[in-house]
Amino acid sequence: MDVRLTTEQRQLRDAAARLADDLGPGSVHDLEDGDRVARLEKAVDSTGWRALRSDGATAVEAAIVAEELGRGLVDVPFLGPLLADDLRRHLGAEVGPATIAVAAEAVDSRGFRRALTLRQRQVFAGGLGAVRAGADLTRRGAELLEPLEPLGELSAELIARWQALALVVTCADLVGVARGAHAVACDYAKLRQQYGKTIGSYQAVAHPLAEGLALIEGSVSVLRHAAWAVDELPPDEAIQAARIAKIYSARAARTICETAIQVHGGIGNTWECLVHVHLRRVLTSTELFPVSLEEIHLGLS
Image (cartoon, rainbow, N blue to C red; front, side):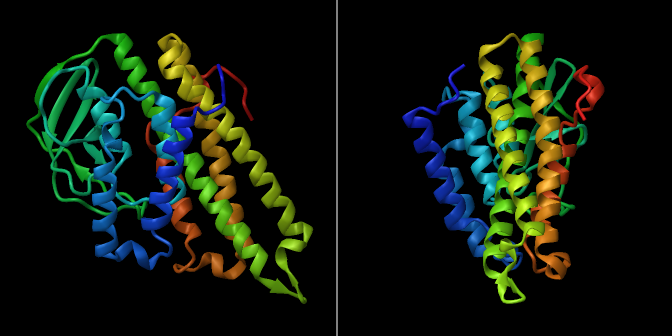
């Protein structure tokens, strides 16, 4: 495995980063800006990134985009449509724009009327109920409505690779959100002053932020390996790598976001402070395709 990104992958990363920086929410109040959300939706749709897998992109490239959009708290659907596209490309079925549903709940549902869901080895499509808000302020869910339309059956190998991809892109989202929260905390630590000095000059603040950076580097490493494994290793090994990455990244991201809140002090516990939006997204991404230590047969602490 070569961990270095190719020239094309770096360009893809830079394009996703620019989009997130230009149109992602810069404050909690931006989440309610309908004009911004409309521009963001149009921009993401025009990139074709939701159909990356159908266009022949690797899981590494899908993870690169998911990570940058997570870093910028991009609040229009990407993860759900990407996973739906990966299912649809194996079926040859024309189902139109769709997101993904887990059990009876569709994720990333804003602007979508249909969702695909996987039940055992069968793929079904169904309509969606009204979009509703949840703990994650950047993504909306909706109820998957019965009856469901059967679209086809997939092999056990394809299902396993899809499951590995699902873990990888949620892991990439976790890593990106953690990077975003860490950057916000570092920026604040450089500006906020106490006793005539910026708070970042004190070890009680600087050391946790340095530890957060180390956690991010570790998360990126396990993420890149898991993303590469989706297409290059046998399905059981790909799932194992993705599970390890998900557990590590979820724990690291939660620690980083909680540290970011603490660095902000009292203001970190207010609605206006953006870092709680990062923490909410981390917690919901952790519970999307959850993994337990028992599933990977390793005593990770």
